[in-house]
Amino acid sequence: MTDYPLSTDFVHGPHRLYQQVNRNEPMGLYLPVGTNHTFSAGHILRLEGMGRLTVPTSETMAVEVDETRAELLVAKAAVHLFTTLANTDPGSRADHLMDAATWQAKYNGLLDRGGIRMWPLSAHNRYLWSASLETHTLTLRRGRG
Image 1 (cartoon, rainbow, N blue to C red):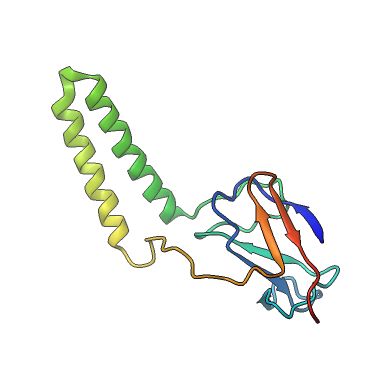
Image 2 (cartoon, rainbow, N blue to C red):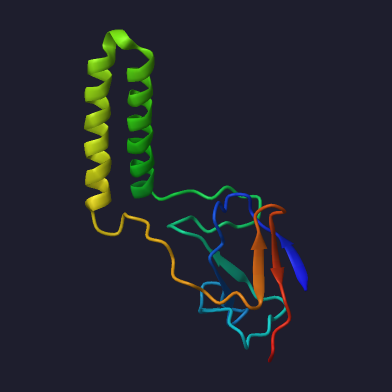
């Protein structure tokens, strides 16, 4: 078994693990790690989380969401902000609730656009690897190959 540091940017994952097929083609084909896989030294591992993320160049680089998901996050944050203001500023409660409803409608509209909603990922074989979010480590086990 081998442990590697895992980026703290993963919240509920990683969900899938791929390994580079040809070490001379970093942008080439990556295949899922399965039960009959043997890890190869010098090949890049690609970790996949729940949504569209930038590709980290190291385990310490921040992972960013794309522009579409950023709009979704801003809209949801605005709903939360105006709902909180409505509860803490009774003099302007009606205005804040109207603003919250406007942002909620924008958020719902964004979710209705194709490819925005983040659905849970299907099951993925983890026979040869595991991730611990408590210790932030990725553990690779030797395969049957």
